[in-house]
Image (tube, each protein chain N blue to C red):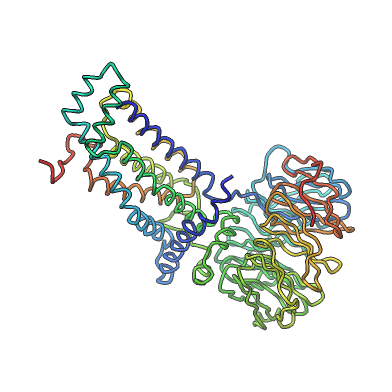
Length: 367
Length: 262
């Protein structure tokens, strides 16, 4: 009897432990953030998957500084903004930090009382960003003093866009708000029928926004809808507009190029990645660069929609690629920041952002 | 390592569950019910418990049969007879199990079948709450596109009875881990069979204490919505247990005799 009892107890114990581990491990994907690289002059600024902000030398990836040195900030989803020698970045620890771009020393910090996902934008000496406090904030970029705040009905994850005297700020409450950048007064709002997680694009008196599986073109002055485009799945990439063509990807891996004037498809057939495309699309020299959940970085000809090259990484790529002097900088969820030749996709170097050490040889292959 | 299982898991367990949960929530929000996501979790947990009830009932039936066999005079006589020969004792026990049509593991195996469903339920609630951006991103990939009302219901309003279901317990919210601990302990206590063997009895007692403490402890760092699911899961389990075996080991003296038993 003891043997059977023991077997049963062991089975029960195993089931409890297995379930506990499964509950802890499989319950949710790890929150690691998807901060993209910001390239300014000879430096790259990026939030790491281990919860730090680092500045790197653009030439060889060596670390100039990291912030903070004694702790981590929690997940960093925001891409740093760098203006007038100050780096601005928000973190999941509720704080927006202003750091000296040369040294990483903290200049000021603003407590948004809730996690920050939205990347800040700076214009006319004012810093704008949203937070999980359901608010959009405007701060003095030099002192961090609050100038105004605007309350929405849900968390604000998307990056706002500043165009002239208007701030276009989306919220998870399904609405895009057009606010007076000086006062925060609402000019108009547009209900997209679903959460908006993408940064609005502004071009030629129009503002473009994605909500669920639709992309809307709105009159920038009134918010009146001009046209809408039905994508094959949810659109999580920021629409990118270059030379009158808008590029965006969907969660089923489809990448579209449409005419920004009327929403008509430009390519014969949309490009198809192996999995979801969440990474914003960067265009340079007629090539569209983006990452995918299939662990790959793609370079696609903007004229034809045909692949130029594909590079593999060890994890999904959610961050936007940045490009400077013919080098593409893109972070994968394998913790590596890759510096790739923009023409060939060959790696120049890679840095493990979790321990700030260069990785040799660089993993992955190019097709 | 288990990547090959992912499509099966997503298509047959996780996707149906998360879509049903979101559908219940979307329906409740259409009638402007306050605390809709909390109610959706409760209704969804009840639904899952009802669906998995046959496995639970089969497990209980097998355990009861085994318990009755172990109370019999023949069983006690065998224990005495082969007290010094454990190998022979084990052989005789197996013979007696076979003769009585009892599978000694019959109480455990059917009870393990609902566990993957429970994990799917847990995963569904976690993703639907979208406390982290990655969760909402994943949720977006799993909602059925032919039910656009589900996507339109995102993000869920996680406010329920003054608690933030997506947040971890604080202040008044500490009552939730306490309820998780209490209901887990009660259910464990009711389910545990008294063991004649002192070693097995000691193991039972430590399990009765360790499991609730462990679950209660981890619920301190989990979103309250998950703990709500756990509490409802336990309460339904307690009711099911009472209906099949009475209070069991919780109040041994007052345990009712089965109607059919003479």
